[in-house]
Image (cartoon, rainbow, N blue to C red; front, side, top):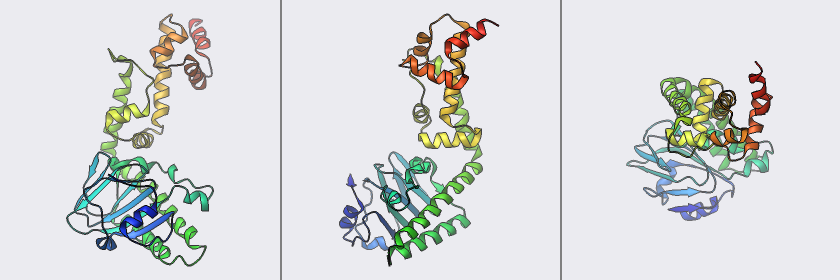
Length: 297
């Protein structure tokens, strides 16, 4: 697997002049003259935005394979393995962004704050015709500015275009979640089903339930699972998990004489103090105070 630590390494591999060390924008149409890497996993130490059209093949991110031909946006975070192959040349744009470039020019921006970079292909963004045209126009403006780099204003202007694209992607994902309600409902229902039976497992060492655990069971990424659940329920996955833990704790406190420490271990907490802090945060009472309040009724 080829790994590129920075944009300079990638441009050297392609034997193309480096225009800027922290950002790069190129058209896939121009890639046919390059040593385009196909069928071989590659990875980067920077973020990648890929907009593809007329694609006839597959794109794979880590272990997930996606096939599609028109108007697809992929968001890839550092270290993810990326493989692509198409029987025909495809169109579109690829944007490479070093994670520190937003900090350098916009102190309030954090590219990693956009959850969809870690959705992988569990939820690539499938664009409507109108959205596709909008994305293509924004990337065209960014590409034109990048190929001029006339002055000190160029990079901030390019980043403004990219910021607009990322904010639009948030809107488009909300639309996509809404149009894919059936899949979302199925995912949410499966999550609640596994959660409901979490403490019923036998011959398993129970650990504190995490979003990662449920995401692994449902074959999606943690961010994608949490965003889907938030879209359908109004709460994040971790909030729902914590609420479930507290309800289980209340049952134990009401129906058993186990100590708070024993209950915390039953619920998968390694440290009873952490369990007590979570319980008080959710109920405004310590576990002992809660037990006294229900016993006195």
